[in-house]
Length: 228
Ligand SMILES: Cc1cc2nc3c(=O)[nH]c(=O)nc-3n(C[C@H](O)[C@H](O)[C@H](O)COP(=O)(O)OP(=O)(O)OC[C@H]3O[C@@H](n4cnc5c(N)ncnc54)[C@H](O)[C@@H]3O)c2cc1C
Image (cartoon, rainbow, N blue to C red; front, side, top):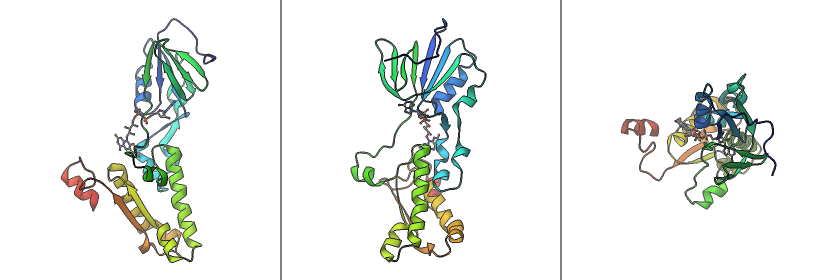
């Protein structure tokens, strides 16, 4: 496999950071003025601010409001290199990473590739749910939600209309709870104006949570307020 092109051997120790999310970006920025050569690798050319995915999923924010090009963070930096590449393998013995654009040697390797949705082994949830762990997935969720309303307009079977207006959120942690709240606000204030032909008193929002309360692990006051 060929080496990743254009990254010079210049005598500096090379730090390869895979993942330009919260951790990787912060580290790359803090090493800006160091004597290392920094190579930042990400499968996307943008950083995504995950805490506001729920706003994109409920059409409150545009995707561009919560993402920005990684290159923008490193303008005019000679010893910081960025490449769009997907990590495929780490060869610790020869100190090299294998990516879909080639191989790159490293002196220090930082893996900051985040996490994926955890279905806790529940295959049915995995099969039927729409995850929200990347900007692409948040946009997909938004499209699914809006498409369901459009479908409901053209549906005469009441049962199908109800199912299109029925939301089930798996997980009553911060993300599930704020998503439920955002959907409720849409139902109360926005959707009746956009879809005056639909009866939004039929729109139901459920949270499925294994623990006895939402926001488990937060203060009791937060759990009570979250439920409300
Ligand atoms: C919906 C949601 C809401 C959240 N809300 C909050 C909140 O309110 N407060 C809070 O503190 N935390 C929140 N979090 C958690 C927080 O976003 C994560 O803890 C944090 O982003 C983790 O940082 P990270 O650098 O480890 O990974 P990430 O920020 O996930 O970054 C990983 C990066 O690696 C890249 N990548 C992944 N795989 C590869 C690969 N194979 N090759 C190349 N690149 C790859 C990805 O493109 C991404 O840019 C939320 C998370 C989600 C999903």
